[in-house]
Image (tube, rainbow, N blue to C red; front, top):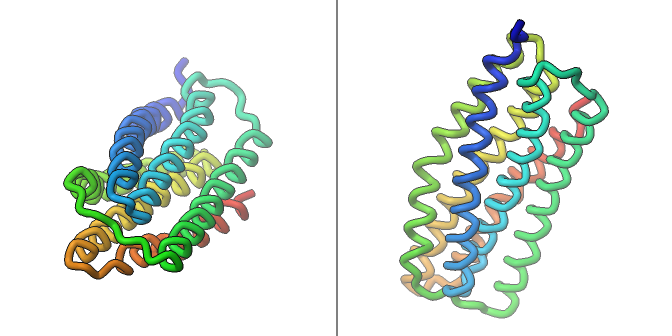
Length: 206
């Protein structure tokens, strides 16, 4: 018989597959536009998309175990939580380093339509996806899958973080167009607080 957890787990699988696809498209678009525009904020946004994609891969691996009805490995789930935390911390470190380098060197971002398209699309799509993940996390918890629910909640936070960074990146790029050169690197720093907070919470999950 199909285990009770299969329905929410399979819904979560679909969400994570969608996340991987969207994050991959975001990463390519943001990194390419960031390189062309010399924009720290766009490159940071692309890096966040890579972290989000890796986060979704981690969660996907855990959810596949549940969807198959196989026995769960608690140590593996614990390692997955820790890996998500490390990804958050690495993202914060990267953003701080990149923004500091840009501010110190007075790096001026150039106009780039691709960057605007990518950030606007993400600012629309990612909040909706994060909301679906949070709902799925509550559903997993109601099926007595507390550890996986926390893992999905952490991944939902990363998706929401992507939306926050998309908005701040969009603001920075627009302000850079009107010659506020410092707005681009400062916009990327808005994500640091959220990345550190979510990384700490993921690390402390038992």
